[in-house]
Image (tube, rainbow, N blue to C red):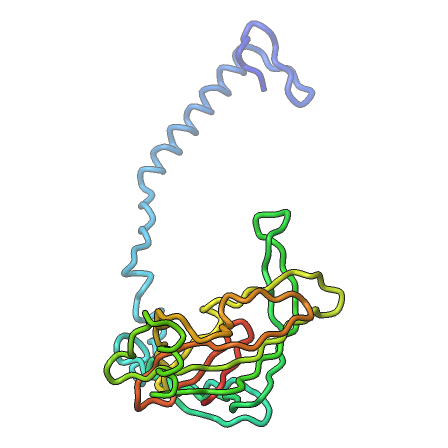
Length: 253
């Protein structure tokens, strides 16, 4: 209803209202508003929800107390981890307090696996190809025999640290294309082969010139195969394991 112009009759619902009627209606509206405001003062504000009310013990079921030191420094875990291979010998070790069960290949065993080879490509992520490789540990020379070969390879090579032995591993590495994959080359760097102690500690790589032929640094193209020495150094009383990182394969000496 339009009551802004009181000089004109107002039409509402098919009825005509005069000036007096409009004034009465305005007074009634004013009274209703005043009464509503008075009633609003009597309304109590709603109680705010606090953290205490939300966590009322009568509303929230009691949580079960963790057992076996599930949190903090009391955490104890003994999961069994195993790398599965066929016809291998198993060697247990410790990894951060967890019992590790390795499956390692013996000397003379050829292991076939697929690796992801990364190279330059059109995008910032490069290009990836899958290739098949075969890895065989042919020979392991340790102790004085290894030191004699290393000393003869380069006069600047120094003897092993006290309590340690040099270990020379002769490896045959074969690289081939998988299916319709491309011809991307693959370089064997020192990080491809790592030596771990029986209790799963990685040994540092010795800074020496290995006997020839060396395998580290060789570039492989599909169809190529090389044999060469890879040098390591380990504690004299340790029986270490060799790990080929790209293929996730263990070898036991």
